[in-house]
Length: 139
Image (cartoon, rainbow, N blue to C red; front, side, top):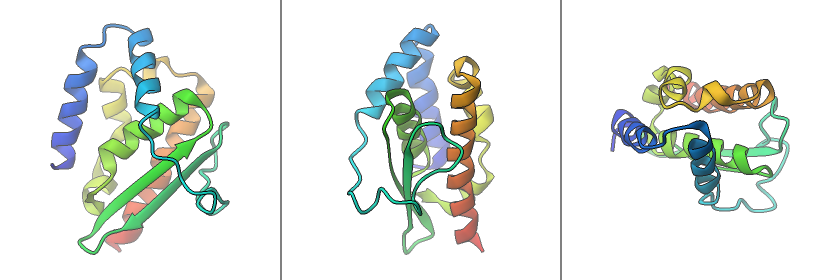
């Protein structure tokens, strides 16, 4: 599935959620799907800076130019946000990740508008890290 197809699936999923409380609950449910990282992966190199919560992001290149992502957080809503980003970007071509506009996408599905400033900053840090790692692969 392409990045745009995945984004469209997520758009459709969120279109059924009428208000922020439903989106919030859905994000928490998404966060529960994150596979836990190993103790060794919860290290400084994988920690996302700029997040008030603890967030660890493991990004690994595949042999065909895709970026494989796994992540974990110690906060429920942040776990959901990172799960959403992993779902959107993992196993996608690095070039597509680097050129995608996640801020517009998150606004479109109604996620970013209701976040606190602190969570918005953390979300921006997660996105920057993912796109930085993707750009590093595109050379």
